[in-house]
Length: 238
Length: 336
Ligand SMILES: Nc1ncnc2c1ncn2[C@@H]1O[C@H](COP(=O)(O)OP(=O)(O)O)[C@@H](O)[C@H]1O
Ligand SMILES: [Mg+2]
Image 1 (cartoon, rainbow over the protein chains, first blue to last red):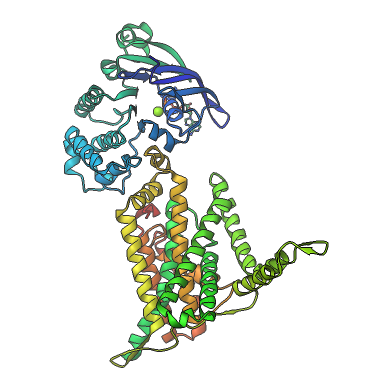
Image 2 (cartoon, helix red, strand yellow; image 1 turned 135 degrees about the vertical axis):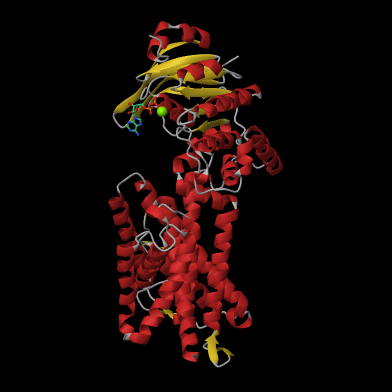
């Protein structure tokens, strides 16, 4: 079976700056795949290229056997890809509930949307207490939950997460990563971008290491954990 | 006392114009962070569409037999004409410059403003040019079409001041010694109705929520599957329609319109939007009425010719003292 997401040698630029120099990887249906790499490696650029916020100048991206390389961002959401952007980017002036409704923007099935709002409230009970509050008044952890919940409201086949651990208190970290595992167990494929390599490799099936715009290493999480290069560079093992 | 109430009503009437026009400035600023300096001319175009409609309806006798319907059609034509103009302006003059510098967009807006004024002024010329296109002896339009084109374009635009057929006359009601003309009542009522509708739309509908999302963060909005360009078009449509409604009101109230009529109300409504907090919808409404009232109050103490100075003095003081406006909140970031 063809992979759910296939990224073939994409090169993405910011003006003249080449941020991705030919990135290739794939995500199979049902997996959790992580993309690790240090600051500036091109992880966010990769996700933005997939979601259509940026368009690669070379290479191609296939989702569900369909080429999406040059589609606009709002069309790619309709295909079944949702992203939790780096830094959460909740709509701070909208309420929690309105944020969730925006997540379901592409859907028309009102009763099912109501049901899914209940479902994400079950996943993140804290959000239910904050339903009528504007999102800007939520704590960092709650905003991260909201960003994930909002992305789920589109009922994506593939969920992209850009550094969900960033700025979270250690006690929250584990629960957010448990949430991600649960979301995956319920049938959503996950592509996870992380600088917290240890946590990422703990929940991912496979991983890719990105270095200055290129994939330098890939393998099952176990293999990556045991790789000397990963241990030295990303896990801080001397 | 009676006089004060009459002046108050006067201020609220003028304030209704300013508030409706100010909403367009503020909504466009909300989604694009730009001042649409052609907005006053979109207001003018709305007045002309309304004028054309009511003139035709009066000529045919329809306005006399169905005055209520005639008024509704006139407002609808003004709103729709202005709305389509606004959407076209955004598409052709602003969207291609979305990623360019602010200065480019500003210059484009000023150019658009001049273009619209001149276009409406020259419409009859275009009409006679189109109607006289011919190859050799043969006109491409039949004679009946040719005279219709000339007539329609002459009724629509032109360099001369156009008279707005008076639909409501000067009559009115008397409430305890205070007389209020029907046209004032109509203007205030229509303004309130549309402001309430706008508020409900922005607060509670899917489109309104998407507008607020786009105003806060376009990139993230597009990640929700929101077609950002379509939302921006809708914003121009609604803001321009409100200006068109104000244009029709102005015609009904002052009984004449001209191609340059957009300038002063445009700048004053801009002032109102800044006073209320640019980007903030209730702020634009509040600012409009405050400015209307400030003007009539000033007339009590200063010669009437100073009226315009008052508005701009308020603008300058506001920009110095509280540039984010009364309801603007912090850093001018409070949008829609
Ligand atoms: N808006 C931008 N303009 C110019 N260069 C950028 C921009 N965003 C990112 N870059 C550059 O692209 C490279 C990859 O950045 P990014 O994808 O954000 O890295 P990561 O998410 O892995 O930290 C970096 O060198 C960064 O400086
Ligand atoms: Mg990043």
